[in-house]
Image 1 (cartoon, rainbow, N blue to C red):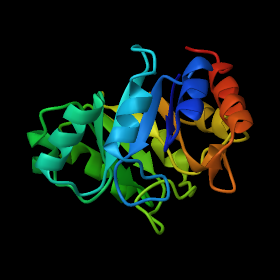
Image 2 (cartoon, rainbow, N blue to C red):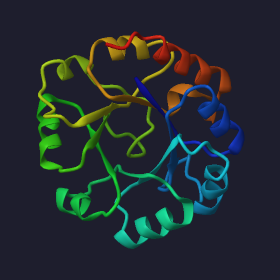
Image 3 (cartoon, helix red, strand yellow):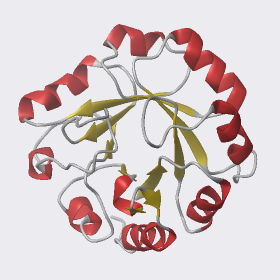
Image 4 (cartoon, rainbow, N blue to C red):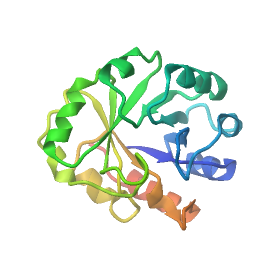
Amino acid sequence: MKVKICGLRNEQDALFAAKNGADVIGFVFAESKREISPLAARKIISKLPKETKKVGVFVNPSKELIHEIVETTGIDYVQLHGNETPEFCHSIPYPVIKALSIQSKEDLQKIHEYSCDFVLLDGPKGKYHGGNGISFDWSMLSTFDFKHKKVILAGGLNPENVKAAIANTSVFMVDVSSGVETDGEKDLIKIKDFLTAVKSVPTI
């Protein structure tokens, strides 16, 4: 099971996450308490292992902004977490992860409108488009046909519930941000506990 730790803002936390098994590190380039500047992200990315994938999180960006940040930072994937249309996502010349807020089975149908290989399923929107620590009913995923799309599960995951989330879904990756924080800051103990919990789940 792949793991993405999102909302990293300093080198210590990012390197710790990568060293302890995080497959993907996420950087937020949108209005958020976890927002980071492209130059700060580039400095962190330069220190991360090459095999650790880097994702940039955007909310309703322009194509010009995406290109500028990709060129500046060297991120591998563009995660679109706003109201981007299928046409906009298809026009981006980089690997795209489209994030969708899920509250009902009807929301899941939106997945098939997008041509990108990766979809991220998040909980309902709060103050920000993501990272609100709110989950949705994972059981609705068990009978849904994702038609070969790689699904990333987010929203309300933490070290205590992530194994159950994996057991009740057939997702490709789990994504955590607020679930490994204490008082709004990344907590290294929680990061390690989360990664240990995920990596202990037997692979099929």
